[in-house]
Length: 410
Ligand SMILES: Cc1ncc(COP(=O)(O)O)c(C=O)c1O
Image (cartoon, rainbow, N blue to C red; front, side):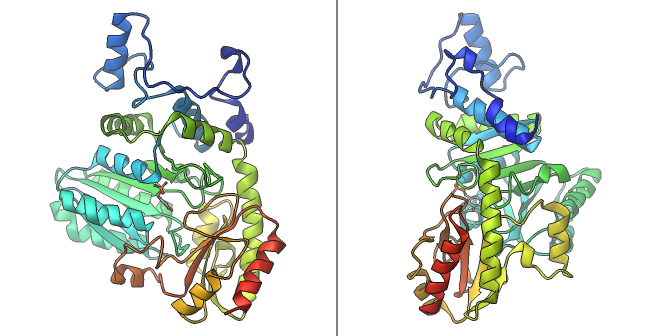
């Protein structure tokens, strides 16, 4: 079965539910056991105390609506297992808590989503975990290896996480996933407990599949393309059964699970993910082309427009199946001009987030990345004139006309 079919057909059997073609929403917090013995056994399995038959116990651990999305997402990604969460941040936090403890290391690429940067610095760093960033781009593997080597003498008994976000939010810079996995493999061969975690929110699941490059875990803000309609906050983690079962253990313990209705919305949205992302990508290609020729635009960062001779373009061609629909661009001028432009758009919605059916436009430095410190912003070229645009499924000519008239008003 092809993936377009899988996301509509798997994970749910209508004949088990009165023939209802669409799944019901299982608004239940708890589940009746057939016997006390079954209850005892299901609870021990849910808590990870025993291996055995899994069953529904309590909706902090699992719910039939979670299961439908988790099965469809796993099949779509070619992952053994998936876990969904109440937000992308809940997915990142729960995944990291499943593997790191005081004294461990997180090496991560800069930039990452502002909330992720904040989480690393304000939460994990304060828990005694070293969070060390390296600049995202073609040089990342070398820079990361150098940084890792300079801390290596301390790695005995420690876990080392290599955390990447590619393309990076918001500057659309790519990191060679295969090269990062090679660094991890080397560490593992030396007896160091290391893992690669990749935030695949910008391109996945349609245009990039980091599990093919053998990362250990993929993270999603499912609020974005997976939800796809800007009406749900959700997250996901995918990987091996062993890793995901550890992550689900944390999810159940700290309660970072999602809820049945949001899971139902995600399952509904997965049915159209191929056509949505394809159309968004086609629109974005035309919009990026327009922006790149506009006299009031300094520079556009969009994979199809990377310099064809650059290392970035090679990385893009090696690991992506398409350019996606996120465009970063720099307006001529500074914050005043950028704000004038943002205050004039009409069809594009001036709002944070991305991946919805509608086009969303924002100012990363003042909005999604406002918690990030000056030095980190500078390193990632998040400037006063930078704009991030998530292209939707509207008519592309209407979008171009909207952007043109707003640019003309500067
Ligand atoms: C790349 C990326 N990862 C993670 C997140 C966090 O996801 P959520 O807002 O669903 O918690 C975001 C949110 O914008 C994001 O863009």
